[in-house]
Length: 373
Image 1 (cartoon, rainbow, N blue to C red):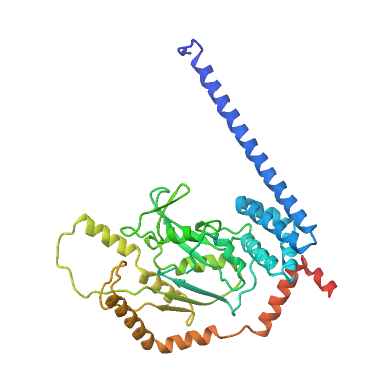
Image 2 (cartoon, rainbow, N blue to C red):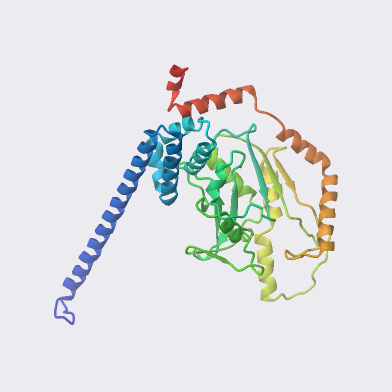
């Protein structure tokens, strides 16, 4: 046995270090357990305070307190659900107070509760890129759920500083129900302008955007055609509902017939080719078009007569793009009529009855609502 500089046996020193490390781990675990118990107790207290409140104005405050709590501690959603908060919120949503209804819609979206889809099945609209449809502001993404006509919305960015492989990040205006985990990172607690800034940070045009400890770039680096991601997110929200229709809008594509006879390419050209291949929107299109049932997937992506860069602003070029778009619509009139016919189909009577039963069941915590009729 050898001795350290202090004269103590080295094995004893190492054993002492191990005991200190073990003690630190135990303390950290205890702190974590105490914190979790504290969050759970706070969640229960907020739910119980809400359920005891009868005055609509006070209910608004109670609902918003619980919303802020769950935004800060998403792990409390499971406790809130176990405390029967959803049935109470659904009944509260019937109160004729628009401010209260808006607050209830927000917290239901945060918890991950979804109403039945409005069509015969899930309807998805995906847009490869484009402008901001005057909605940029300082409101949180989840706050858009206060609007009764607002659909489920997601914007995608690429995190470039978590390991070697870039990762997709989804800014959502909804949460997932406890126990349902998306394949993609993301959250609903971010401001709308942050989502737009992060998801549009195209390299070469805008600087990467730092949000917390993450660096975000344009979502198109990974998912230039977000259709597959949108389908995954919808299945997380409505796992048992079939897909009725997905409409995918491209930003136009340019296909050159000119062959490059150069036998050597620079590193810059090689990297550009790799990026172009990785962000090719048509590969996703071909895959979905082959996998999905007929008359389910509709892709609209006009071929452009020239390759126009993202920062083009000349009127003549923008007018040219608009003209090419109008001509594309004329050529695809029958396809659009077929799509319009599908989207105009109403639910069957059986679907409406099932939706009504599900809502009443959710409102009254089970089939006990029949005894209240």
